[in-house]
Image 1 (tube, rainbow, N blue to C red):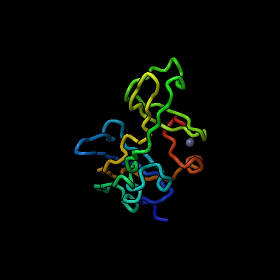
Image 2 (image 1 turned 90 degrees about the vertical axis):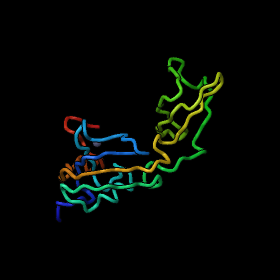
Image 3 (image 1 turned 90 degrees about the horizontal axis):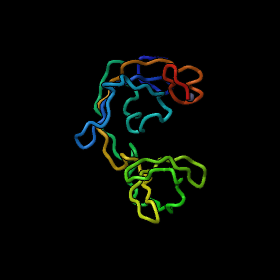
Image 4 (image 1 turned 135 degrees about the horizontal axis):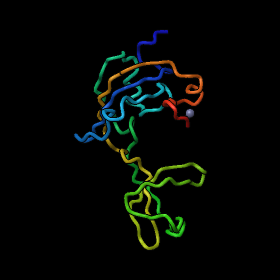
Length: 162
Ligand code: ZN
């Protein structure tokens, strides 16, 4: 198997820049290349698909639609929760992100949209839902995953296990 192009089951190191509406939201410039395990949904589907077959050193501009990115903005993805259901020591502010557990025991991120005396309105949309994502990516390196990384379906950064 040729290991010099991006393919499922390889760990890809990439430099990237994410621009939305002309504004750079994220890049690898400071933290260094991002590693991900290709084929395991570690990055948004539209980018993962477009990176398949790229060679080391190759760079590419990729435009990802909301459906292939962080999803369409869902007007229904809001919930009003009685204020007394939040821990009393939690400092509630509009705009903060909370990790909430739903009825099925799943952890989900939600943003506090609005607070009244009685209730708190939570927004379950991803902050980038509805956004067209403009990536500039460059493949820096490729390697085989460790057995543990393959079992877990994600990359273990040095000295960091989760
Ligand atoms: Zn792990």
